[in-house]
Image 1: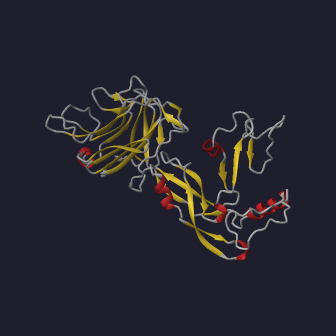
Image 2 (image 1 turned 90 degrees about the vertical axis):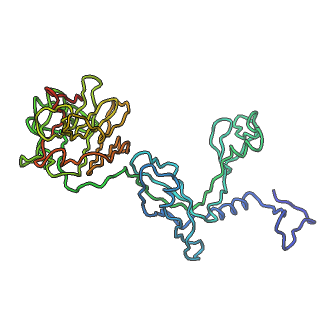
Image 3 (image 1 turned 30 degrees about the horizontal axis):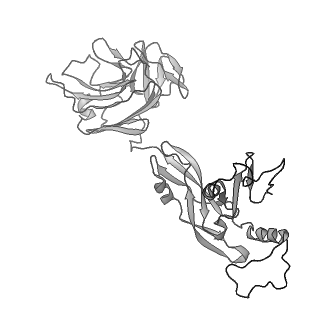
Length: 372
């Protein structure tokens, strides 16, 4: 209601503590003017890319610190600071995320509040409060609705109705490793029988080819009854003259009956002898992975070039093995888990002609096989 008192007045320079009488209509008019719509709709900042495992501060450091905005009432433009909310970005895995920043303007001040009444209804400060009766919704008046000021302040969430916001896309990338741009082989196993096309390589079926469903398309169901002999398309050894290679595959090993040989490259196809080994082999089991690099001649086994990682996992996983000269790096689900810098070079292990490459079988005794 309007205050009517002839003796009531305000001094010309009143700043604090003055009371101005307003009708509901006048109050609504002031709030409407205060909540004037912004002239800065659909602001978009440049997209950014961050590495897997980045912290929130690493993300905000890459996002723009300011945003050009249009000032109200025809006062031109200005750059204002931006506070970014990156809480929804999961840097534990690759992906793309939309993030929002709030521009530092007067409109960003929190000028509204919202709450949930005792009936569980969502309300704002613009909703009418009914103190009693069948439609009561004022939790300050209802039993149990108001506890204390601290609780009330926590329950009355403040927000801005006029904040200027800007959006951007954050892309989280997996760990990458520089590799030779020439792709030696790429097998998908979506189709094939006697031979599998691997781009620049051919996988010749040994036994009877068996395919199974994988997490993405088809997979080779390897066993003692099915493994691959891999060569270049022209029949040469695929790894001839190579000292830097990356081996990548998705795999789900069998829990039992699996010796583990997913990859086996040797100087020749004859069976290996203890202390006379010449091969690079990968033993992949549900209990972990071991990469063996042997170039032994004196009857003693030198295992100093091997690299391994122990982890129980009976489900699908992605494996990357990066061999560069004496160094071997092992990645498990795109995470670097082991490094060894003391191995023999591939060309020394495989010899001048490049030896043989087999997927699913190692040449020990009568053969040892991967099952999975």
